[in-house]
Length: 169
Image 1 (spheres, helix red, strand yellow):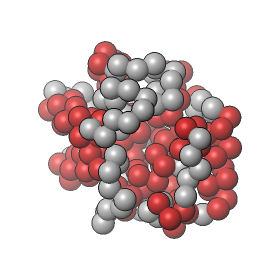
Image 2: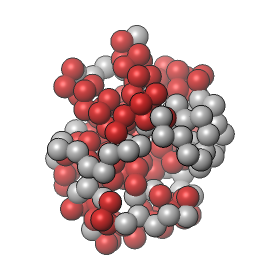
Image 3: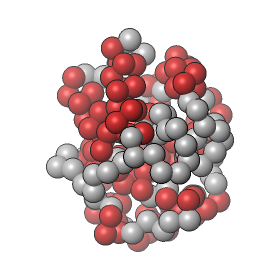
């Protein structure tokens, strides 16, 4: 799935990204969301292609590192535009899941689809980087609520782990 994160995709993301690339909502966070989402996917039945693209696009249109409730909807439009431009390849059903996950991650608690729920959990399991401990009540999947998974994610988040893929971005 990592082949979906092409230099062209990352160049497009980077060209419009307003925040610090190495900041709290930047590339290292996206890498951890990617690792977490791909770790959850076999257990949740999520589509790894959608999880992968969600990781690099969900915070791509933030205007600040604080409250920015419209960043999800902006990023969903951005994802559609990138897809229409041929920047990444995804079937129609996958695109709809991706757009739903990106759009909803800022305000939805859960979603009927396992892929979208997995995306939400992958992002929420990296909250400790902001000083917010992930609360199992706000996680959407059994795999995400697993105490061992939460401990793993918290350790990575507080250590500021930078997954190796991030170096290519």
